[in-house]
Length: 630
Ligand code: COA
Ligand code: AMP
Image (cartoon, rainbow, N blue to C red):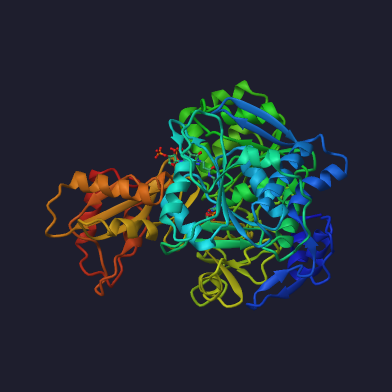
């Protein structure tokens, strides 16, 4: 079928379209009500259906006779390990861990935080939770204990599942001590911390709440998956908002399963049996949807990669994994490609591997610059598909739907709306703008299945953040435009969120930490261009008049504070001391102007600016410190 017909059907007859897609799943109880409203007057899908994600990802395939197929290939260059895990083995691990969780008193509706490196036990933990209706919340390992504590206090988990340690390029990440530190900081105390010991001679501090993961699994009975309502939350995933407090995105069960099964076939073009690799982390939405649930629902073999695109051991790692494991479709962030390109500009290392198995290379997580797209196309000789989505959507919103119809790739564009998403570019008044005109990227309600249900414990923020700006629409927070042919170009966030190496971070959160330094009178934190990471945060600080410390000391302390509070993932390494900041006459700091000057973007000097002479002052400071594009 042609994309246009297929897409139009999803917009014109959403209930019929998604009912058919839902029939691809093995429900305990097929839904009769396809689309309805919840108690908060927001849309929900498949209200009266019953199913279980863990059953669909594991038991269903065993029942169909595929128990010996590889479910997961764990490839870990940092530990020199390769492990093939069949669906039968996955069943054993997950069903026994689920039994262990029940024996500890966890029950349907409880929450459980998972703070783990990229090891199979992280996947087992997620699948064990959803097997018994426990709502998991995976926290990315690059976040510091303070961030973990914020999440513990927000979702109040009964247990935390963690590991002794993770391994970064040059250092060991002490996960268990971080968890202990977070629990000490949190007001809410989880009852149990289940610790997987990686046997890497790392000291594991012992606490009274500790439970040994391996003993728990060995001594527990396997349990079956329980039927859950389609609207039961499968997980909470925290993501950066425009305030210091992260937002807990809630995902349902039935809509999510339907959307993922649909996207594996129609967006990514993979069939059951194929090997699929998303080189992300289980701490991000890409990991949830396309390392764990999507490929396993679709009976693919998913690659679990514990390493980096470079330095583990070199820039050929990705090509080795593709060729060695017969990967058909791969998904990574443009940052990873830029890092590889920097180490191996001519792509010489690619020539050492037979990549004939690779059919499509997908990119997402941040804006894909044309140079990166072109390089990847040239070197891999396969269609390179930029696609756009968010933690909130849970699965792609804009893409070249290769499983339906591969269309011409237009560099800089994430192509067309995916089935179910009526994407429109709106002006401030909420009217659709003409082709070529930039505006706010929004999707007309209802969103298709699988997107966010609400924010954990904060319906008010859910409505004010996404629904109130343009009544009848979901507002994505991104800006963009459509060209004459309907290709959509995302130009970037219109709020204080930045994308650093494909990681979504809040500059407002960083700014709160910088502002609390004892020598800082006022400050601004915003994102500036970075050749490898796309963007990086920059802090400008004005010091208090009675400050007596030297600038170097203050800068180092501020950098340390942000790393300590948010974590290494913030990549906050640049702070400049300035005499003053550009402001409006009413005293508002002009952050956008500061960013645009750094990135040499066209900018209008706001008529409300207090003193226009500051612009040259800022330009000189940037030039002296090589900030932005110069
Ligand atoms: N646990 C603990 N620390 C972590 C971590 C984790 N899971 N992931 C990253 N960090 C740390 C890194 O060690 C680094 O610390 P440092 O400041 O001490 O060096 C810091 O967080 C920043 O990490 P990162 O932004 O990943 O930078 P890097 O220099 O280590 O690596 C790249 C650069 C380009 C190789 C890397 O960013 C990359 O692979 N990017 C692709 C991103 C991606 O796939 N994103 C998924 C979104 S779809
Ligand atoms: P996250 O919620 O971490 O997945 O980040 C989502 C944000 O990343 C989006 O709102 C965009 O700003 C950005 N993003 C993701 N994919 C793309 C893409 N293909 N092109 C441009 N921006 C993207």
